[in-house]
Image 1 (cartoon, rainbow, N blue to C red):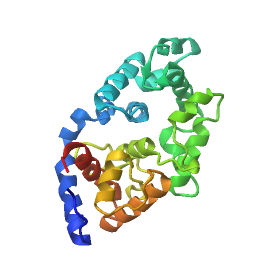
Image 2 (image 1 turned 30 degrees about the horizontal axis):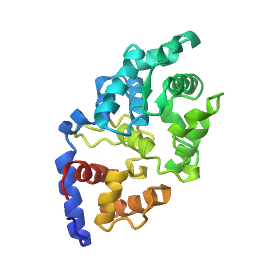
Image 3 (image 1 turned 135 degrees about the vertical axis):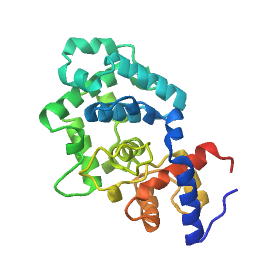
Length: 256
């Protein structure tokens, strides 16, 4: 069982687990393999956004269904998003991942088309004049649902103003922003500093963080995200979210 460690020992532990899990082998069993199928920036970010959105449940199912969603976009997500007509969305009718269904995927296509044609793309709407990522997450939610939409789809996009931990959005941002040259995260977004990222808090990372004495709150909510990210910034102010590999990796892969 994990023990509470002093500051130096805890940093050594986190660094060792980061080094263990942050390598290309991580991709094989993780939804990040979906955007790794592409090289064009817009294909990477669109496929990454959709794959991260459905990243709950068994990873095998997440990957399988994300691949199916990409095939429904002819494995050219950016081209499909930009050029699709309303009739093209009928192909999504039987698409499903748990509670995310074809209605949701069709709206995602419509909203992403609006974002790329009228708002400068996904990266731009996470960057606001306020200059902090919380404001970027708030702005993203508002822009994403700024066109007519099915009410049911709101459950699939985190609203940090309501206290959501936004695990999947923060994971997506980690994928796009971090560039540690280890071949997992992409680092294709240059306008958001790595230091500003928030930890993608989920059951696994939260459990390990609490056992290590890094997180006191019991809920996995936005306040816990801020609390844990603040602690991680003590160990690496420039790249605190690299420790997501450590916390998630231990939680999923190691018996403690």
